[in-house]
Length: 110
Length: 116
Image (cartoon, rainbow over all chains, first blue to last red; front, side, top):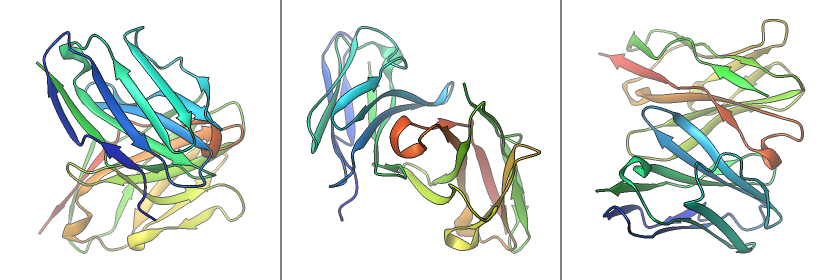
């Protein structure tokens, strides 16, 4: 199995631009999670889906953040407009009973 | 609500010495506990997990952890560390239906530094 796949691995953008992060979960997993990692706040759960349905988005920091899971094989996390404080590593994880993490997307907003 | 406290932000250890990384949790429901390792510029790799059954859990790379319900702890141990164990270690907890469905709450992490 290829594991959780995230793209891009690195993203550098300017403040105000739209950013879209992508995730392909492990085949057969029915839960998908988006986490953010920063030095100040550590690892934070942003949102998670069960069977493609968003269950809890209370960790999404602002309305600028949105996430979708149109099917069992794909999810996106969008930031519009982006701000420098959004700079972080964003992880996607999928699970059937145990969460497995992707390699992350390192986002830098200038 | 759940929370995880990793008592040490950094632990220096000499190579081939034993190590213990401490983790305490709080939860109002039954818990499922995990340790993940993160090498520089990489994602999180599962080391071991406690879901039920034996309180002593063995994981990859020679690590083990013991679930202690009365002390609400899940400390990670290795009898002899290697230079390659240098990494960030995260303890995490999930309640309810387990980490499979409702996400993990992570501790702040412990940086394990192996000295030659």
